[in-house]
Length: 191
Ligand SMILES: Cc1cc2nc3c(=O)[nH]c(=O)nc-3n(C[C@H](O)[C@H](O)[C@H](O)COP(=O)(O)O)c2cc1C
Image (cartoon, rainbow, N blue to C red; front, top):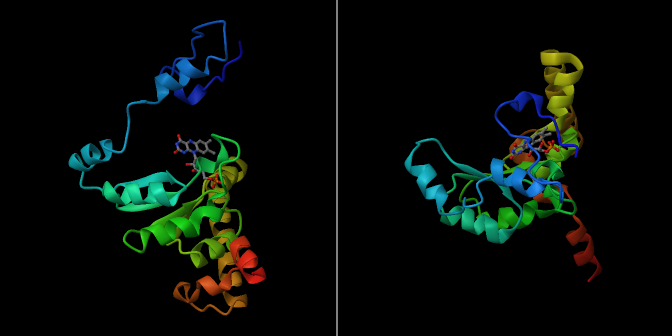
C-alpha cells in the first residue's frame, strides 16, 4: 500500500499501515484530527488566550451564525483551498451569504482561489474585509524563495490598484457591491 511520505512531519505522524483492507484513510485521519472537537471547544480556547479567535472553514450562513454565537472574533470563509473535498462551493460564491449573516458584527475574510488583483477586488466588493492567499505565495517561494514571495505580493497589489483605477475607486472604501455582478444578480435581472 502506498502512503504519502510526509518528510517535513517525520516522527510526528505515523504512516504505519494498520490493515491490508481499505485505504488506511480512517486510522490516518483519526490520528491527526480529534473527532471530539466541536463548537463548545471554542469557549475553552477563548479561556486560555487573549488572542482573537477567528474560525476558518465557514461556507454557510448557518455556520457563520454558530461561529458568532460561540464568540468568534472573525470569520474566514474557506474551503481549505478545495483540497479536502470535491464539490465544496467556491468561497467567492458563498461570501455574500456569510457577510449578510454576520451583518458587520465581526470581520469576514475570504480564503481560497485568490489568483489575481481582480479576485481581491471582487471579494472586497462582496463584503470581505480582507483576503488570504495560499498557493500563489507557495509557488513564488518554490520558484524564487523570498524574492518570489515578494513578487507575488507585489503582483497582486499592482493588479488590485489597476483594477481600482479602472473601476473608478480611489480608495478601498470606494469599492462597493455595485462594482460586481453575480450569478444571482443575473437571475434576478431576468425576473
Ligand atoms: C500544502 C498545503 C497545506 C495546507 N494545510 C492546511 C492545514 O493544515 N490546515 C488548514 O486549515 N488549511 C491548510 N491548507 C489550506 C490553506 O490554509 C488555505 O486555506 C488555502 O491554501 C487557500 O486557498 P489558495 O491556496 O487557493 O489560496 C493548506 C494548503 C496547502 C496548499
